[in-house]
Structures are given as structure tokens and as C-alpha cells.
Image 1 (cartoon, rainbow, N blue to C red):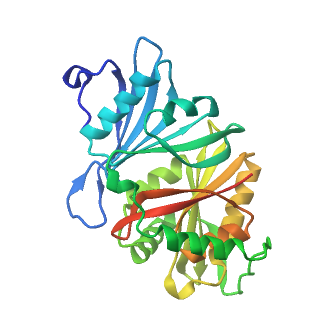
Image 2 (image 1 turned 120 degrees about the vertical axis):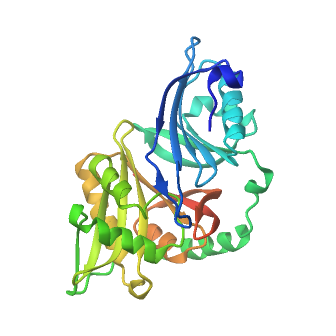
Length: 312
């Protein structure tokens, strides 16, 4: 837990602390606080909003105003150490990239038009050296090369008449959670928790699903950042026996239409770097490869590299 400013000796002072509701993890019967949102500022005009993500052992910067980079980045190092975070993730605007490069951060990707039309440079600092070492980098590069050698066609398979696609509503939440439980043994966010899913649907996440009769067999979501006018396609899952039928591609098309109607500037997605199906689907839908986040999140029992794809 991040200590108070007086206890940790930091020159930044906490403005507000937000803790997420307790969420059960995929593999534990005990409840713990999986994420904390913390806002800090000081009298020098430094402001930083961060998420401490215990499930994925990482710290992510959500918003920032920096007058003194040395002070702010030292604070992030300290916060990561206290919370045993192996990785710090910082999306920044271009004029600030020199500062992060000088403090041990490496650029892992770029998301065009992320900040209301301005590019986000995706930097990471690996607090634990082993976290920076990908065990499957060469195989992931070969898979990506194979996908990018395909002839690009912006088309998807049509649904068979037995399938229907619709927006997930409150009456579908139990089915949605069951789908994720049947697809993943562990997941980076609390999608096995019906109350969590209900909460995010009411605020900033839209889910679409494909039904085979009454059975939910595939789902995907879009998480919207209204302030910066970007959105992330995420939480993609299909039951094994329904894969290869173009269900997710159709869902992503529906999510894209909804985002166009909201005039969102850029869509991006993180796909497991070792997954042919998801990376190929994004490529075929016109997304461009924009980088790879090493050991980024904990899925199905281990840390995995994630490929970044973006579409304007």
C-alpha cells in the first residue's frame, strides 16, 4: 500500500486516493484490493494520477502535468518499489519523451491521435530486470511477419442465421461473466466479478456479444476515454468450439460503428502476441501494428507480451 507523504519522505503530497471495490481474483477465495487510483500534487505545479495494479504488478500513469521531471519520476520509482510493481507504464505527449528516455524508460509503442489528436508515446520502465525479458520474442516476431505478409482485405465472414449479435445489457451479465470464466483461467481485470462488470457497463465500457440461440459464445468490449477521445477494443473472448467463424471480427465492426457515432478519434487494441487469431483479425480489419508491450499483463497463469494495434 502506498504510504502517506509524511511516512515515505516524498516531497509530493497526496490530493485524493480512490480504491476500487474489493474484487475476488481468479484463483483465490480471499478478497483483496486489486487496483488503487491515486492522485498526487504539490505546490510546484506537479500533478499525477496513477493506477496501482496489483494483479499485473504494474503502475500506470493516467494523467499528468509535470514541472519537475526528476521529482515526479523519482516519486513513481518510489511508489513502484513500495507496491512491488515490476513495471511502470507512462503514455506521454511527444515534447516530454526526452525526460523519460533519460530516466531508464524505453518506448514500446505509439498510439496515433491518442490525446485529442496528438500521438501518445508509450513508455515503460522495468523495475524488475527479469520483467523486461521476453521468453517468446522471436516466435512472436515470426507470427507477426506471417500475418503482415497476408493480402489485406477489409472484410469479415458473414454470420450464419443461427447467430445473433447485440449489445450486452444487465440481463446478460451473468452469461458474460460465465463466458470469461470458461475462456480464461486468469485475466488482467476483474471480469469474473458480476458486480464489477455491472459497474463498468454503467460508466464507460460497452460490451457486444454473439449468441447461438440463448448461449453467449463470443464477446468484446470498448473502453472509452471521453476526455482524450480515444477508445480501446478489449476483453475479446470466444468459446473454443466457435473460433474461426469470424464472430469477433463482426463484433469489432459493431464496436467501431458505435465509436464513429460518438466521434472517437482513434481505436486501439492490445492482442496477446502469441495469438494468431486475434492479431490476424485486427490486421484484416485495417488496424496497424504499433509496438509490443513486454510482459505486460497476467493472463492464464503467466505474464504475456501484448501487440499494440491502432486504427484512425
